[in-house]
Amino acid sequence: MKSDDELIKAFKDGSDSAFSELLTRYKTRVYSYVLKMTGNRTASDDLFQEIFLKFAANVNKYRPEQKFSSWIFAVARNLVIDYLRKSKRTAMGSIDEGQEDRPLLETIKSPEKTPEEIALLAEDKTTIEKAFEKLSEEQREVFLMKHYSKLSFREISEIMGLPIGTVLARMSRATARLRKYLPL
Amino acid sequence: MECRFKEKLLLYFYGELDEVGKAPVSEHLNSCKDCRNDLEALKKISDYFEETTASPPDLALENVLNTAAAGQTGFREIIKVFRMQWKKIALGLSFAAVFVVSVNVLTHIDKPDLTSMAWETSAVSEKLDSMEYSIYKIRFDTSLSYFSDFDYTYEGIQSQKEEIEL
Image (cartoon, rainbow over all chains, first blue to last red; front, top):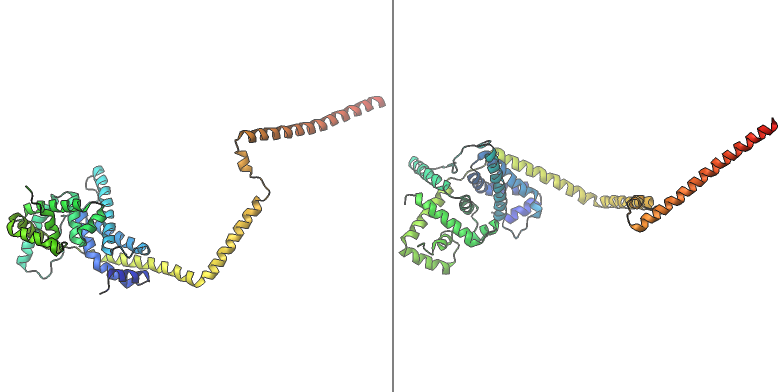
């Protein structure tokens, strides 16, 4: 399997299939992060496209010493923050205009699951979803970034421009809060 | 009181500790039920997030692929043309540069910049302008008076001549 850097180099040299491979590799993680941060599918579809097109347009500026996953999640984060700011302003003017009422966490795919497993997952879903809604936006952001980007806390702290201690503290508080609602 | 291992527990769970860092956390877990519960919760939540990933719709993927390919093709075409024709392009650009410079030099040679003169506001320039204007005015008045005096004199002589003839 080719590394991200090899695919980016191939894409720079004109290989469309290299771009397609990168897209396939990251589409689920990036889209899940965006969807769970915004809670809006239409906006997520647009943001997802914007993120990857931004990469395609700026591929020549991409520095090989930078990790692709860091780069793509940094772009995703910035676009999500912009979107959330704008939607907050819109919401202040007119409530729910253009917004879809969707749960923050969605079970999209659960292949190869028995009915019991699906039922358990649905139960967990409700619990975790409710617990997740109790988190602050900053805690949610760290949590989702960690789970979907698979980046280290050090890399996440660089993307967010925060000390690693702050990132760990947010994650720790988020975990403690979620734990309160989970039956253990 | 909150356990001082909370943040280390996160690094432990996500595999971001080396062997030296792992050992005290492992040892601590044996004696701390709260941290064991945290670890279990983390595992449950992580599994849940893995199970509930979402995929973008096919249309969004198609759009991204098509737009990126079109952009790359356009860019590649420009590069290709440039690589093939770079000598001609360079020659054309050189000619254009020489032409622009020549036109610029020819249009400005020996001609004072009237615009900048008009906007020149230093005291010296103002005085010079005023003197220049005075000279111009005197010349103009003189020339006018010369012609008008001449006409006047000529008409006077003519009328005197007519009176004599009568």
